[in-house]
Length: 58
Image (cartoon, rainbow, N blue to C red; front, side, top):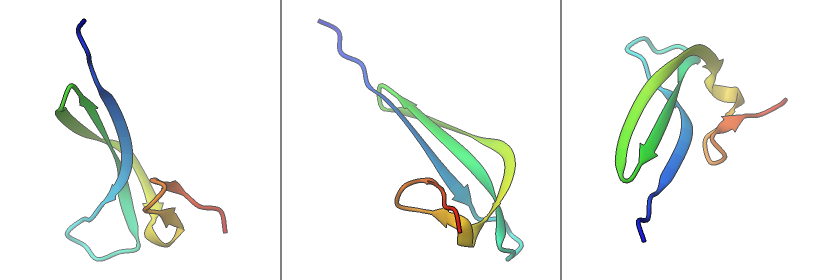
């Protein structure tokens, strides 16, 4: 039986500028091969829950 794996996470990626807004990236892993791309959306780092990998409501 052929077994496969799949994973998806969202994270904020630091830019060269030190601002509080960062781009949201997505990493998709299929059978141990990771690929990541930008969602082209920005989010405030203080409103992001790193452990959950999602935004928080304040």
